[in-house]
Length: 99
Image 1 (cartoon, helix red, strand yellow):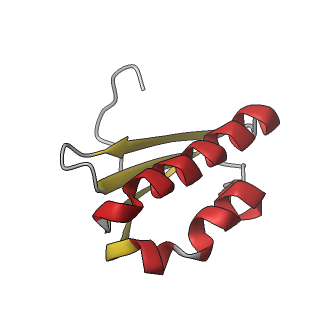
Image 2: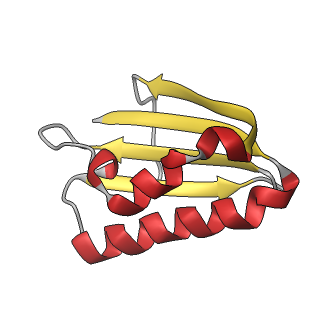
């Protein structure tokens, strides 16, 4: 399994727009139900920092790049951000509980 964590901070006046674009990604995922993929997004207490975590099981492709909603989300991400996305590939899973 591969895991990716992405963190960034949007401009305060763009936070609601960003959240709506993220929700659209989840709506498309719910329609398509891609196998071997799990995804979660959190907004921090400050209301402008977001963290996305994606898990892709071995033998499956991450579906996000092919989603129209994800393409809309990423199209203007640089303009929405105060701090650009920082991507971390997570390697060895030490433990998990009900995830």
